[in-house]
Length: 488
Ligand code: NAD
Image (cartoon, rainbow, N blue to C red; front, side):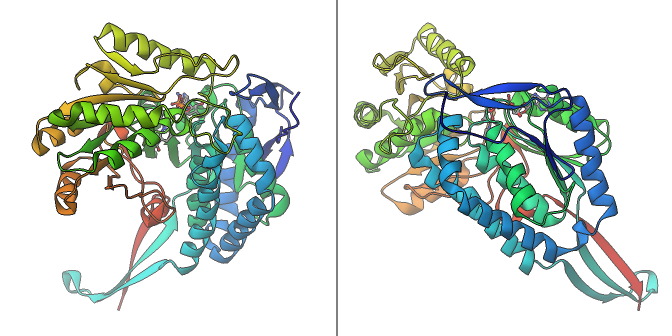
């Protein structure tokens, strides 16, 4: 048994408690396949209570109108995370299989900093805006706009960067005055239940305002989408589940906020520093074994420099093998589960069936007997219409595709149902920015620039999602706009 421990209880209406049924489910370490421990297996009754509590806290308390209490509660939560950061870091590496190196940014420290950022934003936010006097129909009227919380939010999250996704929903929603029921992925319950414990034990956030229901049952997420007491769904996950969430939310016309899949292009133009560009592309695909929705998975390179690009990417990827995530030097850890590894392996088989060739990788690493690892894999010989170049694989798998100039590179980058992220490299900054502007995607890096930060909005075009997370835009997703006029 591991010496890592996690919070086993649900957090509902101010109380840390087991599931009504008493059921639990196991959470695993994907690097060792060992059982870390258990989490409460919440059922329909628990979810019903959590929704009722969130509804009550929104309708019957001053939470939604008292900014000061909210800012204080969020700052307390931020401090609580910092106080426990060592144990949360170890737990996260164990439960998510995230390389420990990643916990100093997207896997932990950056989302925690995001709580403080959004508390500051709520404190300085212009909640009312005066529009002055006008005379519609000859009636002199003084008008103003008031920003109000949208209500009860059902937050549904995946497993790949759980703190980032949980906190980028919960922080802004609470700061806006909403109340929240969080339903995390079954693979990473502890990364959510810790949030319940910190809110319960180390903040003044009132009972019912925030609730966490861990469960092995995906249907609990659908309960949130369907329940008329929930005003808004904030969902991150696959595009196929996002479609179901939107469909289920339609009956009650909920506002839906969707962060979905991606198949982002890393475009290298013919005048780029090839060594620098391919090193970045290689590093990106290996990070957390490619389990990031915004990771660039198609390397689009000038046809005349194709071999140079492949050699450059292969050289760096071979230096970043799949390895123990607790080692500070590791970039590529395990996949989250056997199911996910099966899925990635099915795409590797498909790549060969479609006529692709592995320059590097293509299977499980020979030196690791346990854990759900896949070797960093570089594929050539496929064009952009292949399924491997079109569908999200969510593993350390990079496909190299040739282009015939800037217009062709833009065409290939945009030839995707997704539009989440991307990258462009050129020796000419203006040329790179011009290409970046033509790619239909929610975020894009130019010559190695990184957009990921609490103040930068993140989200997708096309089937990568609806709405934005983080930044002022991410906070305003949880607000309604009320226009008021009094006779002047
Ligand atoms: P998933 O869609 O299988 O599950 C996501 C969450 O939805 C889980 O909590 C799950 O229990 C819940 N769920 C499942 N069925 C549901 C239903 N019918 N109604 C409501 N909730 C339901 O995704 P996953 O496998 O956990 O995560 C990987 C996917 O997430 C990838 O496609 C990845 O691109 C995407 N992702 C997107 C972003 C982004 O911000 N765009 C970030 C991270 C991950």
